[in-house]
Image (tube, rainbow, N blue to C red; front, side, top):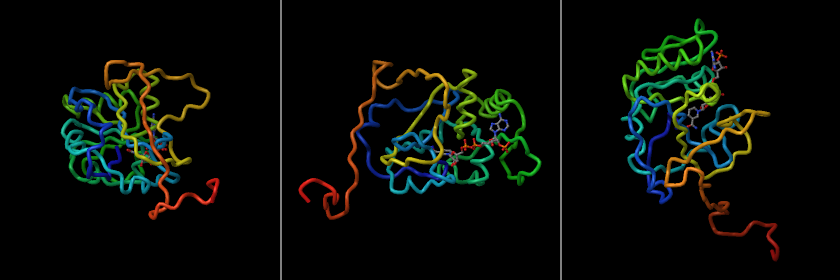
Length: 212
Ligand SMILES: NC(=O)c1ccc[n+]([C@@H]2O[C@H](COP(=O)([O-])OP(=O)(O)OC[C@H]3O[C@@H](n4cnc5c(N)ncnc54)[C@H](OP(=O)(O)O)[C@@H]3O)[C@@H](O)[C@H]2O)c1
């Protein structure tokens, strides 16, 4: 989930069947993501989320179930403000993994760690005190996934195609990672989504459409 975002607007039908997130000492890989699998645009841009709406109560739900946040140094350097997490609706311990904590600007509530990723997670879980740890980093999430330390992958798909940026899961040459769907009764079900490209505001068809 983008730390800078707040929930607004409508209640998409697709989200209505999802059980609310629970605080249970879980490790969540939690993001808003473009339809084509990017969690940030090129150079960490997040403006592609502008105008997206999230179901009512979503921010409160995650702010209430999150006990600690674990992120990476690149994401921190791009958005070095813990006050922006869930638009300010969440306060708590933030841990940032880096090989060079010595040049990080000291920030209240933020601990810079240079240790094994599993140790960083152990520290974050302890700080979370029974609530969930949210992993706000594609690279750290991938490392934790490889070690079997991710409990749930929690995504909000924003209606946009980016084509470039930072992928949720960048693992060229790696084997597929099988997942279980936690919504509905069939854990192997493919999820149906249907979109159409946004055309000009006056409804004019694209210029290369046959018959134009
Ligand atoms: N869409 C959303 O909901 C959402 C939510 C959160 C974040 N984001 C985006 O995600 C992007 C960040 O992703 P990213 O994967 O490129 O960068 P990142 O994970 O934030 O940072 C990578 C850096 O973390 C450090 N690191 C990673 N693993 C480490 C390890 N095992 N030991 C020590 N240090 C380690 C390294 O820092 P050093 O180079 O200092 O060693 C590495 O260069 C940002 O653009 C952010 O905006 C999106």
